[in-house]
Image 1 (cartoon, rainbow, N blue to C red):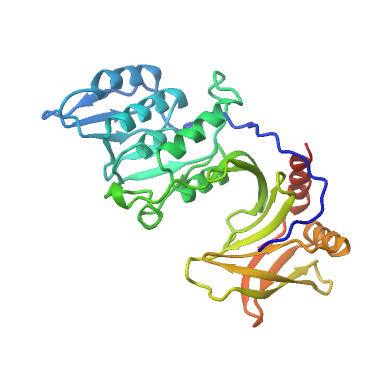
Image 2 (tube, helix red, strand yellow; image 1 turned 90 degrees about the vertical axis):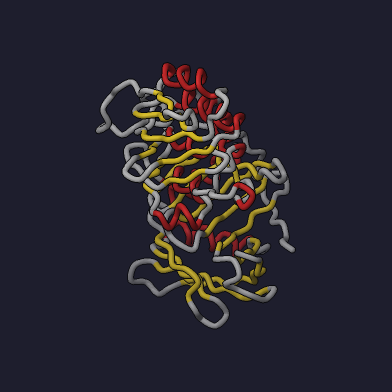
Length: 342
């Protein structure tokens, strides 16, 4: 059982600065046609997603005999893509990205809405941005992520989405598509709705700071977590409980027992390493521990995290659990406290 630490962290105001998906600048700007297969079983969307495309698809969505939607799109406008996705969800249609085709950016919303969904081609995601879509406001992000939950979007996909700048594209490998239930060939075997719903995030070099909502409890929390460094290390603060703890996520079933002692070894250039020791709970897929109740120990942890160059976590046998660059940690920590105190 985790113990609360005494803090003066306040209630988190859930807001967002993320507003719209952008296609890569290299994509040609063209109106995407919507077509229907000869037997009427498959609708096809080619090209950029626009309001006209959404209207054309709406005219086909209710047709008797329509079973699936084939996608080949660089992305486009978020709201039209969401309109198409909701229609697909409501009709229980399947989605597919055929081999040799691509479904990037806002097109991913459409793909994820499929009852069963298979990407044989390329599926790509990135952070949302309002640069090319001024109609989207900060409040739109809540609606977007509510839809992602409805579409049963895997947390792995959402995580990659948040970590990829708007000008880049994270394209999933075939192994990632299968391993993380991005592809669903049997809807009855889909993963459960992710319990962490991202609302607002900032990337600070090696660290991601954000506000999330726990969909199981509907409680917002602030998180500071490693970016593209595995296993994922997350510092989470729940303002309602005045509780701050650390999680180190590992593959399910890879650790056993109920508790262990971890060494947090901070390096700072050529200086001798500085270590803190914590008692951690062993959970199904994570090591988890509360912050020390000693204010001096808490201060030492934050100072080492903000000024160090590397953090290495070792188990009680001295075996390395994870190694993390602390590049950007000072700025990330500043953001973490600013959000938690507002």
